[in-house]
Structures are given as C-alpha cells and as structure tokens.
Picture 1 (spheres, rainbow, N blue to C red):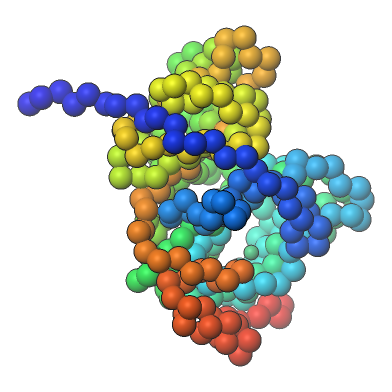
Picture 2 (cartoon, rainbow, N blue to C red):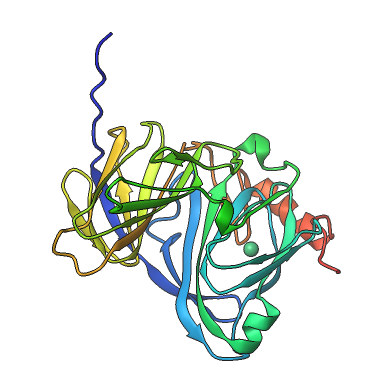
Length: 297
Ligand code: FE
C-alpha cells in the first residue's frame, strides 16, 4: 500500500457580492447569480439577507411564489421566519434552524416574518442557497426537511479554536442527518484568531467559501477575503485550508459549501430551473394552471 498524499486546493477566484432588494424590500447580498457569474455547478444562487434591524411592524418577507427543478436551503442566523407551502407544510424557523426544501416538480411557498417577530421587530439575518437537481430528479415529488438548531451536529477542535456546525456532510467527526439528492457539503465554521482549519473535500466536488464575518486567509496561497466575499476553489486537491490570522481582532465566520457538479444544461427563468426552454414553458403553464398547488390554509 502506498500512502496517499493529500493535496491542498488552490483559490480559483474571489467574487464580490452585489446588493439587491428581494420580495417586499429585504436587503440582500448576492455573490451569485450575476451577469458575470451565473452559477457554480450544482449551485444556482446564494443570498445573504441582513443582518438588519427591523422596526416593529416593518419586517418584510416573500409572499406566495413557486419553485420547480431544484432545492432551496434556508439557514436562519437571527430572527424568525414562518414558512407555508402548497404541500401543507408549515414551519417557524428560528435562530440556527435549517429548512431544506426540495421543490422537485413544483411547490408554491411563502417565506414571511413570524407574526410575533413582525410585531416586535428585531434583528434579521439569514441565508438561502439554491441547489440544482439532476435532470432525473427535477420532477420528483417535493420533499420538506426542517432541522431545528439543536439537532444540527456541531464539533470543535481540542483547543476550541475551530468550531463547526454540520448542516450537510461531515466535518471534525460530526455527520449531518440531512438527506441530500446529490452529495452536498454545507458547513458553518467559526475560527478564533490564530486558528487553522483543514477540511477534507473530495476531488470531484466543486467547492466555495462564503465569508459571513471577519477576514480570513484561504487556500495554499493564503488569499485574503472578508465579509460578503465568495472564495472559489479549483478542483485540484482533496483538502481546503483556512486560517484566521493570529493578529485578527475578531473570529472568522464562514460557510464552506461543496457539491458534485451535475454537468447538465441549465435553463433558468425566475423561480424555475430546468434543462431546456420547453421545460421552462411547461413549468410556467403548470404554475398558471395551478398544478403546483396553492396555499389556502
Ligand atoms: Fe422561495
């Protein structure tokens, strides 16, 4: 047996977020999609909403709208969002909770501030990731997974300098219970000043990091990236190295997200992501004809 030497991935690029207004006017930072960077197979979109303090009665959400052909993953860092969908699912997502919704053939859902939270106001901060589905799963029966924060595995290094919350995949010996349609890694790391993390990521995965807070050193070249920036890694190794400088004034907080590319044509039109124009036209017709259901409860 020959020893396998693990190789570290290099940084392929650093992407800045654009700021946009979504739904009823929520400020969102979006590293992708944008005109120069439309998707990162199998990922279609990443939105960070907030952090923002909303006054009583002023919280905004996204009322009834459809999805088909992919999965939406919501991760709430602060605040409380109420979800309802045409499959009859309801849920209140609070700080640290995750919702993994596989739209498949079609779901109509609403993502609104929870009534009491809307009344009192408060801090809102969260993320939404869109994960593409392979063509054979685009018309699958919708699936809804809601994982309260307490059930999401966490782990830390012996010295406590590196902490991770394992939303999907595996890190520092902790394994997520989420079912994903294709292999996906979704890890929320926090590194104290002076900490170094090395995360195994299989070579066939596309991988990126999105920085939530602080500034870090990424990859073999120790490239600098901070709050609101996305770090793309080349598919040239089996490990990703991240460091927070010993001189840093604050912890480094980031998401490491990775998945196996589908390598299929992507045709997107708003909330529908399919493989062909004809499938998009069909999706629009199916939605208009009520075949994705409605929320009437
Ligand atoms: Fe949605």
